[in-house]
Image (tube, rainbow, N blue to C red; front, side, top):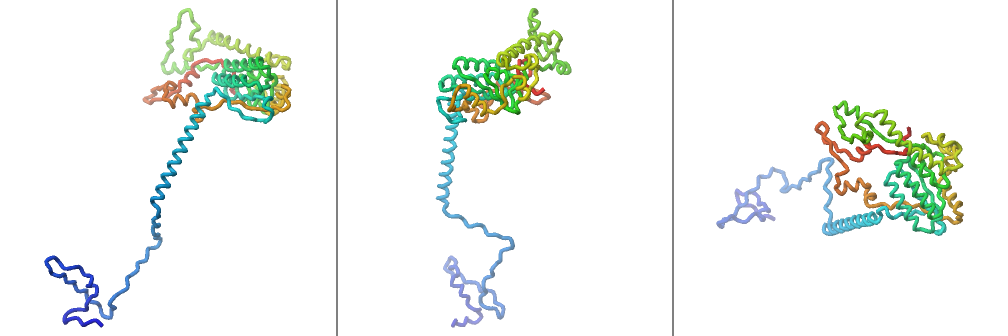
Length: 396
């Protein structure tokens, strides 16, 4: 039982036992009396619990293992970086090894290695680069004495006359030196320069949907003289007095009848050569005169077969079987040879991309038009301003 407080003093607060010590100077600090309690009020009240507002979510508890988690993140980052570096190293190694001088091989039909049929693709527009790549592949084939037949897979609209002729001659040389049979098989298209190449084969296939033919030559030219006249620009190129035809191909000078006759004479010679190639390649298989079939028209497979421009309508696998039969093979091993990619190919670009990657700006020029700096690819300017003899199908 608690003692009664002295007169004039309220009830003793037990919390005073925890009051702070006295003030400096030795005077104890007297606790202040609590405010008077209302009557009928219990001495103590339970603490009031505050309810969280609606929609309130407490923060997630902190995860433990901070040190272990840091070690794991560091280790994972290291492994990822090492993997990335290794992949780039392997990419560079494969790219540098595959400079186009070696051929990659894909087995299409597994058979006896000593009875190999080599399949070489020729796709896209035929250019000087196409001819160089084709020559490198054929060089690889020449080292393999197990190759008994050659199939050329064509899917091209044609291209440069000179490049097409180089590929044609390269096939003939390989066929003569190695004594093998050559079969051409056409994909969606083997027109113009593509058909020129096909004439080197001993037997020609076309798929039912193939377009072929389009025998002829075109000199691509663009004339800007009228446009330059509107802008007040004149071509003042200087040529020797005795060389009046030196600059007639210029796209910046008006074309004259004399100029047109001169340029027509240039392509007529190439056109005659194309017709001679077709006559030699197809021989007695032609069902019409060369002038009738070589009028520039593209033919469907059915029409080409009727005219004798091809030997059979069929697919690539049928051309492999035909090559095997012509070479007297019973367990043919069909292998496709194609150029091994180089580093720039694997990175998504070719020669131009390589030049840009290495900082070569010679491929582009800048032109100021109305205060704007316009970058122009020089290869495009060269294509527009230089007349070229092309054997290519444009769908016209």
